[in-house]
Image (cartoon, rainbow, N blue to C red):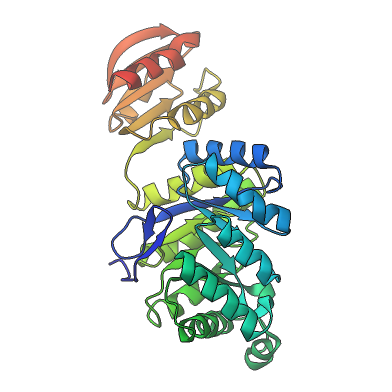
Length: 349
């Protein structure tokens, strides 16, 4: 059962409650470079990103938010460290949400100034805590970085902002340790109704990061915990969206889009199945409006039958291949025409 959290509006996206889990990523361009940042965000939008976060380390970056917003269609979150003036400037320039750690913003008066600005512009605040930002007192109290410490730190910071009269909050508690992240989310889930942004921070490269994120996010989301997610990868941000979508679809938490299944190759494989499967995966990214299963098989003899649960599929042999639906062959084709035939069939569906 999905954890019940309060609803928070970020631009035109609502999270929490019964709203779908939103998929986020973060730009790796210089935010001050408006053209490059807008270009990357549009690529992420096309891939299925719901909310985008941009680093705001300078006043120039904060002011660039206004121009970036003109060129994109999804909500923008300004990521702030240390300087409360940057948080205020980002909000005044149109950020739809800000991400801060009140502990490194400075005095209570400075936090209050940020909260007052966000209240005036109706901009939510994401309170972010991770393993590297845990306070010295909590490190001493718990004997190092622990799930309990992360939860206590986040709840204390959220309580500070709520005491200042503002409830439009999101909490993120991130760790690069998958088991610690799971324990932390299990502990915080029943202690607050604030929406939770979930991710495994510093997860690693596309391979290791995808595995760690799938395990961590999978366990957390399966328990009904989480209102937005980000898969953090050392790689192109679009990969984060692709992996995140697959995690949500696999758990039945995101509808639409095409699922690709493919055989693992064996000695009977007579085509370049790995390349073909990768091309099919790239192809189906543009079909978010369709919902079906596509199979890519490496054997024309057994492939169609083994993939009969697929709505449509292709199987390759020596120089030729088959197009099939639910295991039934509908067309025999030269190998180099398989991808085009699959696209044509998907366009018809």
